[in-house]
Image 1 (tube, one colour):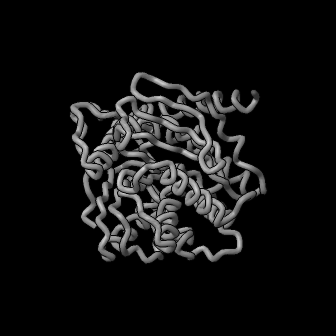
Image 2: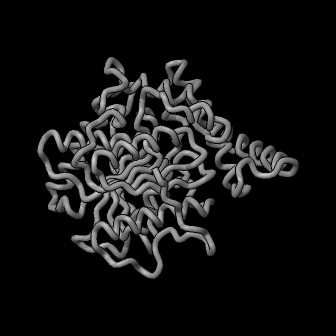
Image 3: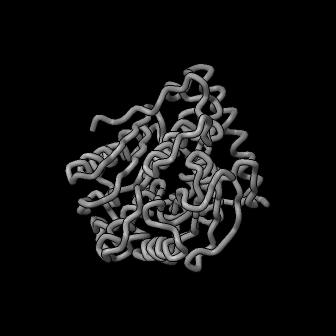
Length: 350
């Protein structure tokens, strides 16, 4: 109870501070609304607190307080088990058997977060894609180090296929560490000679746990992630495995034979440089990659779908990608519609 009160008081203080700063200096980045900027600053504070806890050897789970699942007229949400893991399933009310199924692997640096923290993002993705979306609570460090998360992802994927879902209608998706986990999953499936999914959606994927990207420092002023948090999480998850292992840092992987990829990156986030390098390597390996780079946006800006037009636009674009890959018609109205006049997400030339 005290922790929740602290969060509320902190949010109120940040909101007041952002209002004063904008009064004298304007938005921190062009196009940032007051609500979006408040959200970024609040998350920044929580992440900084999380970095302190990591360095002190503490757990990050108390930082996130789950809420009860809820359904609406456009999506049904239910709690379930997948490969023995607690899982949320979001099913668009328009979903019919044979339509796309998505295995979504949430982010959180392999050390924190859950299906609950990503609930609105994944619900809106299910609506936009007209899909059924499984979001498992895979095991996390420091209690479960590499390759536990990859093992869980493989087990979930196999169980979905075993339930009768065809690989041609199965998509994988993930943000940040979840994006990197999707790429590790693809490597494991390819190595085992198992069917690959129809396509993968990677939102601000963390593809280099060696943390060598230049924008890790040059964009720290704008993004809510900190270098301390990122490097600390990488070491906790990798444990004794070298950080450049391709299942940890997919930027080093052999990407040949991967299915089509949609990569979305915020132009102001700390992972810009490694995302651009990854996209270049994937295309050089013959992978069909669509890269959408949203100027001025932060890491996993899609998570701000309720308060950000670019976030809504990105989720809508991901839904279109799924529908197009599955050969489904695009509906006149999708799930997370962008505000009127919002430009389409630009595609990177890299």
